[in-house]
Length: 81
Image (cartoon, rainbow, N blue to C red; front, side, top):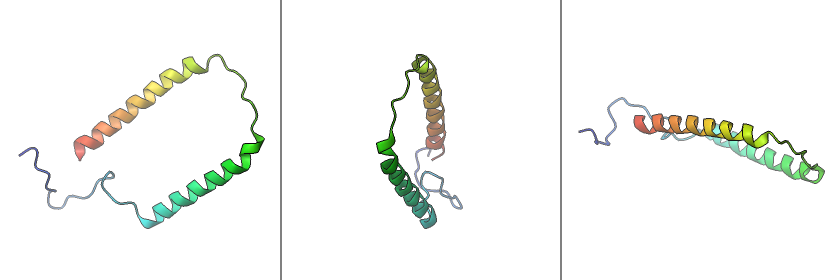
């Protein structure tokens, strides 16, 4: 059947279902803590950002392209799982 959810013999876990190794978890935690500390240290020194009129016309197509790319990658990952 096409809807059979049992894994095939010899199949390996894909990125979506594979658990993260302990080293990767620790590295992610260190990165989050470092970014939070940097944010807290730099927050008092914020300056106003100058107004750029072309920001929205450039940002919107870029955001749409990134969303289409993400949708395609999620579709491929879902179809393989």
